[in-house]
Length: 605
Ligand SMILES: Nc1nc2c(ncn2[C@@H]2O[C@H](COP(=O)(O)OP(=O)(O)OP(=O)(O)O)[C@@H](O)[C@H]2O)c(=O)[nH]1
Image (tube, rainbow, N blue to C red):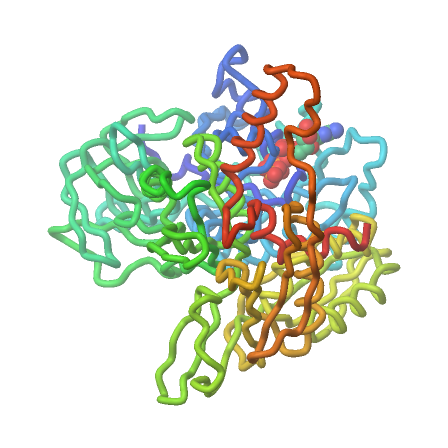
């Protein structure tokens, strides 16, 4: 029976790997939401890639029924959130669907950057927060220090915290009771016109788009005509239900409830995350706050391994797009690589996931070029253009001013690494140090402003290397600033390879160009002839390396006539070719197109 007072909507927020998924698993078990025999580890991580890498990208909500000590049965909706900075808008919309959050902190790691960032997102959304110190079963758990960090940074005290282990199940009953007592029931009224938040949407082959929603006011029923506030598009509801966690139809959802809606929607673009669903016949006058159009932050070129696979790649990426509104693409024609796409991503993890899905789910070998941020260029004729592709960078003579995106960057680290980290970020990464805050006895939060391009490439690994793995980072994009960047072109065997060109700050022009040509020398195999690799900027060659000629061919190794061995070698070569592109007689492997991303890989190790 619908009773708003018996509903609790919560999120679990945590830094990556602090045990969110495991804890939810224990809660599902404890409340018998999922029969034990069906329980596989990490029930809520549904994508294969997520299970393998142990990271949650796309969250699945779940409704549990919990009989509390006061004898009443409560409906608790748990909305899991992605734990990566690429998806912080999705996290904020999931939080907006809740009244409370469990803040999970691994007692062996302490407070880390996403703990901090997500707590602030929760506070911005006015959520009641329950701090839970997790993994207390671990021998190296440092409960006292973790609490003192929470105290310094967020203001919680020892008495606020629950001590738990997702491994042993310790603390689960207390967490559930605290959810009931501390987190308020949803407000909102059943009689008001429909106002529901879209906090996620997925595409189902058979049913079309399945919207994940939180009803704020009113009610949504099968047969209702609904309208999307941002676009005015109208749809008729064909199914409404809850997450158990599989979809169970219920016919309606009332104010305060969390569930799904199916309405013959063909495209996730029509169900934008953060948008408000209202009634087509009796719409609300203003939407729920916080809606933003998702904008890709990085772009890269995507090309088929062989030109004849273009159509296959197009179909695959169109299919991926059905389930991923954040993915944008348009056809691109590169003189070097032929027909492909310019693809926009939320960040590098998002890019990696798309590439892996293309390869695994669609079995397509593709070539991805080095990603770049979006630059804004003001031309001398007064026009502003967005540059998403270095190949389209205007000639310097036409440029009045260039702007690049900046971020506020927070790093949490043991204090002993503070000096080296500040040195690295201010001298090598064009960052500006703003302030430092204490976090517990041994740690600090360092705050910087820095260009997004600098922290996206060759940053995370260095940060980890400098801090022996202990520092963690988080950032938010704050806007654009004028910047002195320029384009560097790469020539392989004296031919311009547009897909290898990149944009760089003038202060780093020579250093980066030198490292890229050196890296390309390592990544491009030797050929029968010598191959010069040159970097060019402002009409001059600024760096050069040479790949020496090779005289042997692959079959030379097979003296004797073992034909199967020969066949195998040839086959291997053919396989390898899929991920190579022949440009001006030179075979360039996929890895070379990502040389810019890899230039830091050999250092700092
Ligand atoms: N000893 C111990 N290990 C735990 C506990 N909870 C989780 N782990 C382990 O910690 C690792 C990360 O746990 P997950 O539940 O995947 O963490 P998560 O926060 O969901 O990670 P993301 O999905 O990447 O954000 C796994 O190897 C778990 O087995 C715990 O209470 N005690």
